[in-house]
Length: 315
Image (cartoon, rainbow, N blue to C red; front, side):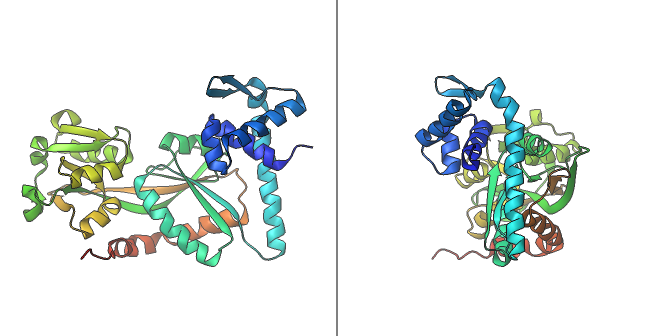
């Protein structure tokens, strides 16, 4: 009979389509992952993956059994959850897919508070694109997702998690740093660092600038980076100015490495949403976290900034 551990290896390898990355997620060696897959293939006389050098892709047989493997592992998690409930225990894995930089900063705070009451729960946050969050929720690969836009799909339930504020940051030596204000029209002459085109932050900024007839073609974009953290670091080094989530900027602002500048008439805000597939049966831990996170909405928006700005200053 096939072992659940072997199915788990197959599932992760199928999600990553890379045995090395699968090994990292599973805390195994790459050879151990390969051996597990080969053992399954040998036992059932099938090929689960087509191998092309280092690249792998699911074979027709692998694609056929993948949904069944997911169902078996989900049933196993629910069974384990049932055993824990009998003993009044709450534990197991809590997997969350997150596509927003602000969400990556917020989730550790929420999860650490949740773990105080449920220390046997093991959270795992996967950083993926917004499209991947939607795809994996719809296909019931992840139980919970966090994204910068509400997901419109008949099977997806979304709830606001956090109200994010997007601010303009500059280097402390920038001429705007002392005054702290600028006009939207002033932006067109400045060297601007921006995140990748499809980021939620970029979309929110460009939507706000539309009201002032400013498009990306009017801006002097000197650098485009793949993460908001990298954008913030570039501003610290004086490369240019940038719009980032205030949550990401909080530490740099507290340490005086960057300065916040208000753009008159421009108030950039967006909601960060938590989402789930209504057809995905939650474990007890997942259900408790969902309700816990929903209950924290007001607290998060009233108190989160204090917790982010309480850093020890350097001597």
